[in-house]
Image (cartoon, rainbow, N blue to C red; front, top):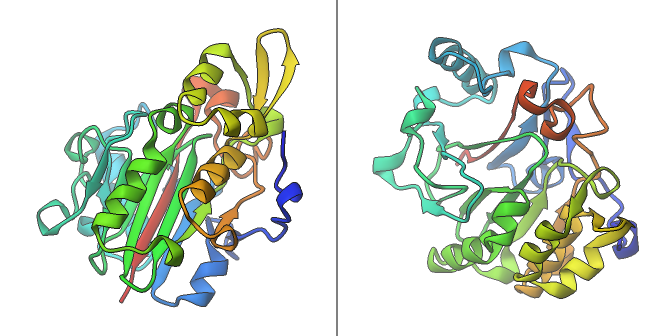
Length: 274
């Protein structure tokens, strides 16, 4: 199994905010001042706004607080239903703010949101699955993707790139970050997962897995994603991957594998400010 160090990916692209509430995609925010992107932590209770048992009133209140925190209007924050598939949706004027009041109004059967609109925050929730951040600064296109193994096996990365192509984005100008997620040393899978991912790219499976015991393997999901992105024409230097593991860093992140049904969710967010 390859590691990020094998590919000389050394610098951590995400930086913890001084208050400990979010990890920001600092490397790109510094390069492109119009961009805001990151993922929340579990430190601030007001940011626990996506749990299986949260009532709508508390969810709305916490989403309003979060919008204020990142300097945006809550009714413009746009959410996906997230069904672990490969649905991609381009957010136009009529979809801005879907899901901000209740998750029932989120963009249905969607795990990736794309927009060219300014001032429209895209939001997805994660708790081990990888958040993928796409930014094309020349055409001002952003995409935010929920990519666990199921969505990856459904070829969501290829589908997102095809939609970005249709929006006028150039793959040679795209910048991609693979955000904090469960890392290879903590992510044991079985043969059905291997078989599903092999239908997308058997070479990537070989390079991103390591056998642990009969019928079981460790999967480095960020490495798998990076291989797919590079094969799809994203420049190697434009793909950054976080080293932070949601499973092992229990003080910072929720983890479904660690906490099961009790796990909260982190919010990954992305917006073009101007």
